[in-house]
Amino acid sequence: MDFRSRDHGGSQEFSDYQLFTPGENIRHLDWNRYQRDGSLFVRQYERLERPEVTLVADLSRSIVVGKKVDDVKHFSAAFGFCLLNRGLTVRLYANGRFQRYMGWAGFQQMNLDIERLESGQQPILSLQKVAAKFSSHVIVVSDLIFSEGYEQFKQNLNLGNRSAFLFQLSSPSDRQPPQRGDYRLQDAQNNADLPCCIDEAMIERYRQCRQAYYHQIEAECLKKNWQYREIDTADNLKNQFLSVAPSGILFL
Amino acid sequence: MIFNGFPIGFAMLLTTIGGGVIIASHFLKIRQKNLEVPTVLFWRQAIKSSRRNILFGKLSAMKTLLFLLGITLLMIACMLSPITKPLKKTIVVLDTSNVTDLPQAQKHARTLLQQSDRGVLMTVGDEIRVLGSLTRHSHAALAAVDTVEVCRSPYSGLSQAVKEAKAADPEAQIVVLTGQQMTPQKDIRVITCASGQSVLPVVLKIYFLPEYAEPARAYCHADNRFDYCSDREQADVVLETLPEDLMKNWRTPRFVEQMSQAVEAAAGLRNRPVALAAQITDNIDNQPGYALRWNLTTGLMAVLVCFLLLEIRLVTQGKLI
Image (cartoon, rainbow over all chains, first blue to last red; front, side, top):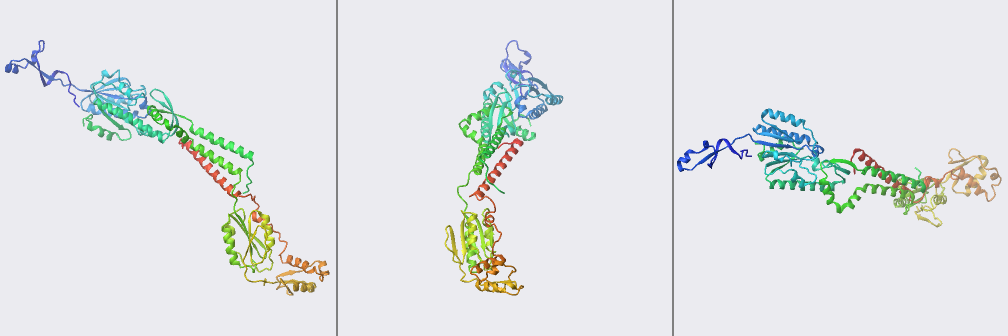
């Protein structure tokens, strides 16, 4: 992951030459080159800055109903720790609000804030209106469930050309619901209800539909050059982190 | 246990109550419970993809109900209507006197009882014994065949045994195993197993009081089944009194007949207080096929109760079939 700023400015490390135009600071003129070939060039330097990563913790109703609130918090805190440990700035976005954290003190504060986060306040994860405020690198910890399906995913997670890492949490009960019999299913996100007779055949079809949905999301991520990873909440945290380490996001 | 079948009104009431309980428990079982899920998106798609199988899907949800109702109806039908195929019932009348070749007769008896569903063995010797019953399986009668022994009494009540067997169950097949010559009778099969002995060698010693000595000697001379015995201790039968009129008329032709009755009564060969027909049928309703019907009904009832208990257990545990 490259955290070099795309802006050129107050620098410490030489970056490139640029033709001198009137009005530019003459202190950056390369006099040696002028002496060699008589052309006026300005030296440019990379501006070293403390890079920032936006960490999105999805605590919408689907996460609450799926009993994955603790998993989202644990993963967000763990990612936050890794980023802060590398000297990066973390901008946490949860429940429609931003919080910025830096350094060791920031890590402690972030842990406290994450612990206090209330869940289920937002019906669905939507980054449409706030995406403009996101930094160039975004980590999303979510179940990536959108009641309207794939189109709503594309609409709500419109992150432009930012580099993104999507971590999709899935629990065993998501993959294989344990209920059997006649149920009136209620959607946590839009309160729609659906009568359904759950039996083994229905579960099998449910699994196929669910798999097809996440395959679509994975394909979309591939197209946008985003990283996508499914996280099994039944597995332990350490194993999950080791599994995502090769992606480079953890800087291990 | 006595079972005479239910009256139709009671059966209808039982069907209504039983069927009602089963249907009510089914609807209780399949009542829709609310379940909040992260999204109904996948479920909606799954239902849409299974539309073509909806009829079979519905039927599969009702399979337990249909099964229970089927068992109930079958049970009621069993209780109401008789089984069309009657049981094969055999009454084997075995003459155990020494004119019969007993091993051969026993062999025949075994074969006959093994081939029948319900079998009774009647042994006719010094008395008539009933072994087994028409309301139970032939095993008891079959086991009793080996215990039969040759009797030492000269008495043979074969005709009386056949008469009792006919009275007990007119539908049962009666087979007589004997060494004697029997007059052919309708619905009775006679298998002759002759031992080769033409006379009954056993003679009972009978003691009379001294005042009856003269007529007693005359009688024993006429009836070769009995021998006059003057020693009371050595006698098989003791006869202390004789009717007064018999003593007066002992020289008349009817004397032997009357004396025979008196002696046979004293020897215990006549007027036995037995209810053979009742022993054969065991005092239970002998409607054809009733035992099988009862067994089937109790079996179905047991299956029904087991399934209902299982249903209740699953419903209380929150699991469903």
